[in-house]
Figure 1 (spheres, rainbow, N blue to C red):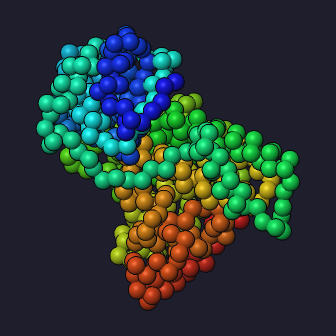
Figure 2 (figure 1 turned 60 degrees about the vertical axis):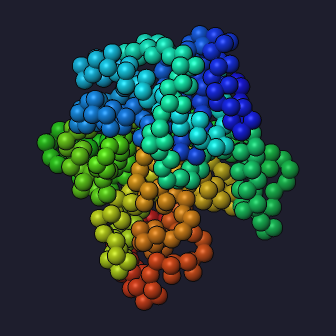
Figure 3 (figure 1 turned 180 degrees about the vertical axis):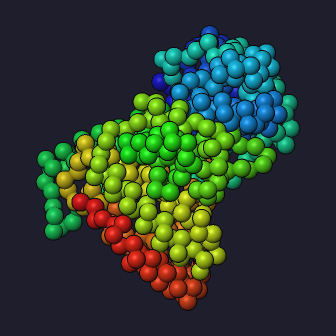
Length: 459
């Protein structure tokens, strides 16, 4: 593995070095907007891909109108669910010819190169062991020197810097994990519950396993999450009965449908904002059977956790929706947001059910920090709207975040679930007046009292 920073090495020199050396492998460029990847075989670029929203292949084809948007969404959804190559499905389905796809991706490669050349502070890694493939329905065979010439020719209007959204990745290894671990220790271990050196060592190994398990899974995920057995069974029953499939109370199913709906970015932003709009788009795609019958997206039954998450999302949605009108927010939007926000914490709790952390303080610190990182990364991969991204790493209070915060305060298990506003609650006054906040809080409390039976305390 070769790593470096473009502040010390020019990107053009890096590409020419790979070409002159006739090297094969994957070059990954890391920037504030995401990752850009160039696959090399014998010094030539044979494939490109990107996690930057408007550089993803489906979004690129949608912008160029090479393939109808509806067809792109259907084929990409199938590719995500089946973990198949999207380009292979495009060509096999006849949505585009291999020659036209190759021509379009060659232009995308030049655009990506142009933007990398103008991205300050980008880092890179080249993995010569990465198994690059030529059988993708096409093979670009681009010479890096020609790619650089084409990138340099492009005008500034081809480079879109976009809005910088802070994406907190997982602490994968090395210094990142070390800093994360000692942050948890500083927050979680108090004088009244001390630990010795041997316990610290055991905690270190355990947390490394927990973080590594989640990080490995997130690295291979397109943003989709495994569905609990109970949600799969409900969807399957309603689907077999020909009934409309409602998503209220099905947070993981709502998350996955949101991923599918956000997978293609076009000039018309059609990303859903409510559960009802998600349900409508799900009916159009008609892929519930594909999702529910695939073992790829089924997780083992965990009855206690599944029931906890179900009750929490029901109560949180209702309480946040009750607060919404007093803060100028559509209650339907808060309901969808509550369904999405619980999912990363549920994923962490699922891992903790098999790798339990016995120290209560460290466990609480882990639940405060790790779901935010998981949620931010997955939501960014899925290109969720900024209003949702901001909930996982709140730098300032937003009306939506405050609605969820007021709803969260009424959960008996509230410490388990993520805060959607900064820790300084005085900053809530940046969003609304004390009177409006008080009325919103009262409304959320009243709804929670009426539905108190929906809540359970986390063990």
